Image (cartoon, rainbow, N blue to C red):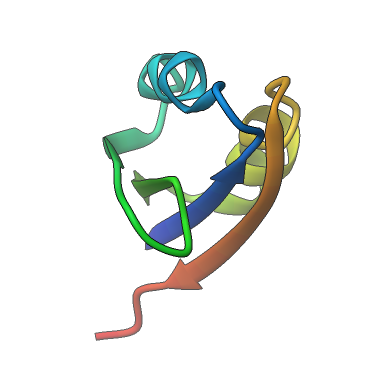
Length: 72
């Protein structure tokens, strides 16, 4: 199973959060972006909810996530 996770961060913390996300098992790609979100991450694995809820959302400075499960 794969999903994109769109992440909003607190001001000035995006780079630190991006580096922490890249170290999480199951994260295939993570990039800083401009626009409505600060980071876009590609996850792959069976327990995507665990990665988002237990790891990404617990990083200091993560404000909001939006998970998009890849269907096709």
